[in-house]
Length: 132
Image (cartoon, rainbow, N blue to C red; front, side, top):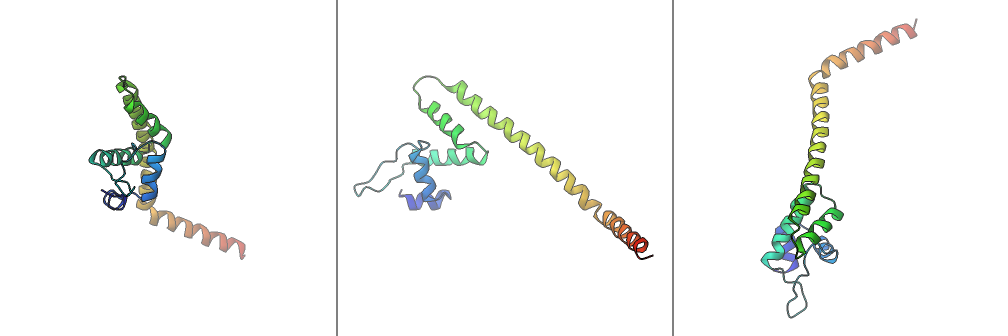
């Protein structure tokens, strides 16, 4: 499959696909007789995998480490699992912070009229004391 179709099907820009290949996240994509990239099913699986880990917030540097470990001939399962577990912890911490923000916004929304009424009353009281 050519880069245009891969880009469209995977919702990844052509520049991103080239970049991922250049930095080693994707294996070197085979070329057709005309010299154009010809993505295999395996290449497409790598694109899906990289997208999933990027969505999970994994940095490019960590992804590069992960992919290097994956391609090493010796058993690197423990190291790869450790990288995934570290990313999971970061994502869970981020999720907790987002939940705190949501809780605060929900409170503000639920009590919006009360807060605005108090603010308006304070403003009126201030104006009354200033104009005397």
